[in-house]
Length: 110
Image 1: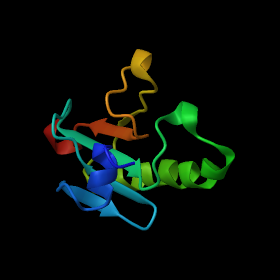
Image 2: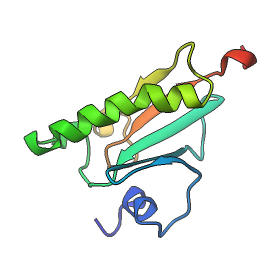
Image 3: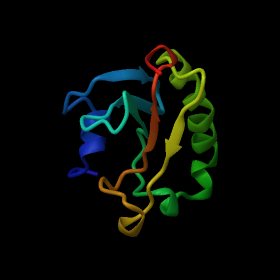
């Protein structure tokens, strides 16, 4: 999607502080963090929200959810973290490209 900021980040057209990337997904630091660690995990395939996920996204969504704890642990959140998926305007979604927030405070900072 040409006007989607997360698509532009995934395509390398807009810089982001990436912490993980593979062929299907990208994780980067949120530019307005709500916690000491605040990361966004996005699929490189564009779909607006969880409400727009289709059967063909099932495997990708599963792989993304399994990647979250690995990324969290690598950022000092082995003791726990919060995940958040805002869906739709009424759900607080601001960027209409599915993304998973990974939030927490590293154990040494608690």
